[in-house]
Image 1 (cartoon, rainbow, N blue to C red):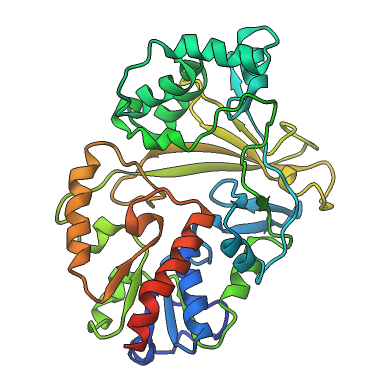
Image 2 (image 1 turned 120 degrees about the vertical axis):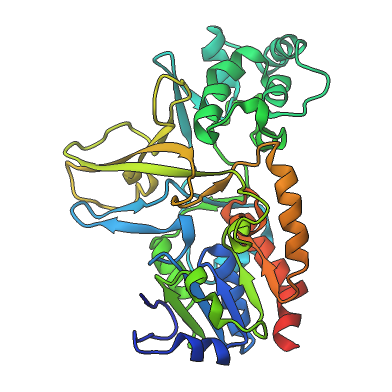
Amino acid sequence: MTGAAGGRTVSVHDSLSDAIRSAHLVIVGAGLFGLTIAERAAAIGARVVVLDRRTTLGGNAHSYIEPSTGIEVHRYGTHVFHTSNRRVWDYVNRFTRFTDYRHRVLAVHADQVYPVPINLATMSAFYGRRLDPEQARELLARERSAAPQQADNLEDQAIAMVGRPLYEAFIRGYTAKQWQCDPRRLPADVIRRIPVRFTFDSDYFSDTWQGLPERGYGPWFDTMVRNRSIDVRLGTDFHDVRHLLDGTVPVVYTGPIDAYFDHRHGALGWRTIDFTTTVMDIEDFQGTAVVNYPNEDVAFTRIHEFRHLHPERTVAGGRTVVAHEYSRSAGPRDEPYYPVRALEDSRILSRYREAARRETNVLFGGRLGTYQYLDMHMAIASALTAFDNDVTHRIRS
């Protein structure tokens, strides 16, 4: 199956082998890392072929308009763009304008609702009394006193940050469901990116710039590939066509790194996500965009209600779109969304990274290609750096 988007309309009769032979660069994956490399390469006159087995651009950031309501649905869960990187912010604003949306998330624990990440309001509500910043710091200092001296896994690190009661209420169950493994098997740095605030600031992100693309993610990604030098082939699995590559055309590979090497060193841990998306005949289901459910007796991890992401838009009254999110370990036939990075994955990963270094004409990038948890802005930043430091040389050589 072949398809197209962006710069050049691709006929099903076009020869992919001819396109690859005439290309300066082949990119595997139309997520934000791949799209950024493609846009930058085309801007300097390179002919680029982009392959993706999905039929949409943008990877997990893909969204679409639900036809009966006009609500923009994030197919793979809520994605809010945020960054403090001026270069990244200036770059993405070439393709879209952003709303001033500020993401705020709630969590339901023991039939009570709390703001997350953990802040002064969370702590005051959880401990049943109004805490000022100094009282909260003193309270957490007492709770953290029992934490291990050396935090070498997620559980120990979380307890060192917030103490055991808050960890048990908001982190342990959610993490176990989300990553499908005991938090003690996950590295400590997974939780270090989550802030603990001693203010009533309830913004989920603390970056300088944040918001949602005004016209949606689809138009943003379409604009990125609106160059006749970019040949996008959607619905095309790299592993079905890799025999067309003869090793002379540079490749940027953003698929799973272990799949590239046919799992010769073993399978890395990945998680996938299932969504149950429903159009409901009510005006408003939960009053906000995202509600987390950290308790392990609830099967799903969170509920998304997409109308709240764009309060500035007019949508059909009396209906809403809700998605329940379920996380599970990815099997051989599943779409791998996120690297688990359990402690036992590190040995296997080191072997794949060594094998990747020997692939002299292939650059591994993106969340799957590097086996790293990358937010959208991080994928773009790493792509811009890779283009400057590596891809430009590969194209010109």
